[in-house]
Length: 123
Image (cartoon, rainbow, N blue to C red; front, side, top):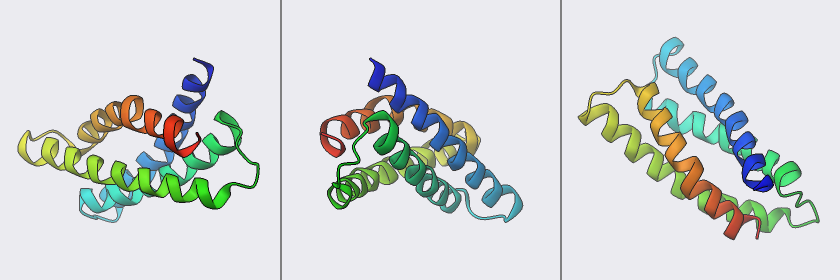
């Protein structure tokens, strides 16, 4: 349970970076919300990976290339799932892109991301 909580804290901190970038790119620089979402996810993913590696899983024993490769594979899946869900919720259900992103982030964070990081990336 302790690792789950640490991963969720790392996810929240990564999400802060993600949302900041997404909102700035969409609202200030007028980027399309999916481009902003992709950029924000990437920034948040990098932050979360480092927090998980150094704090949640404490896995710093020289495995960086393996961990990074595994994380990139999982993160690619996350990007596809996130983009699809945000697009469907925003385009077809007419949710605000921030609401779509929040729903998607929560669902992916407590399911796909946690499971894949625990069982594959940092296993």
